[in-house]
Length: 136
View 1: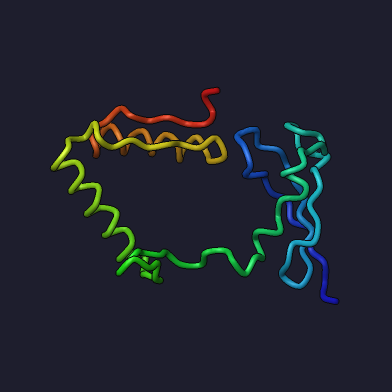
View 2: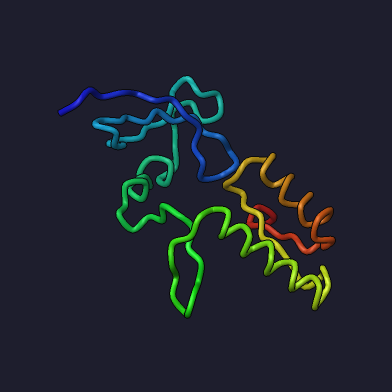
């Protein structure tokens, strides 16, 4: 067995910002616990913060973008995938107008990410159709 490292971080499951201590061994997460020094959660964490980390090492996890070609999803470069998205959004906007495009924001991301999401929709796309799971 390799050396075990303790890494302090912030949970990414919601916007609360709980402090976590991640136990890493042989470059794999082996345990997560609440950080007692974190002012937000004082060592407490929800079940997701404590136990939902196996996906990180899942062999089914996507490691590159996928683009549908000939009815099948195939690996693509980031430039190809982003170009595909830009072209599709441009075509929808040109044919149906900006109000035909909407975006769903996420409470699990940062305020900065949600800010740029709404800025992109309003300034680039020209639509106010933005929703998110954090409004309920």
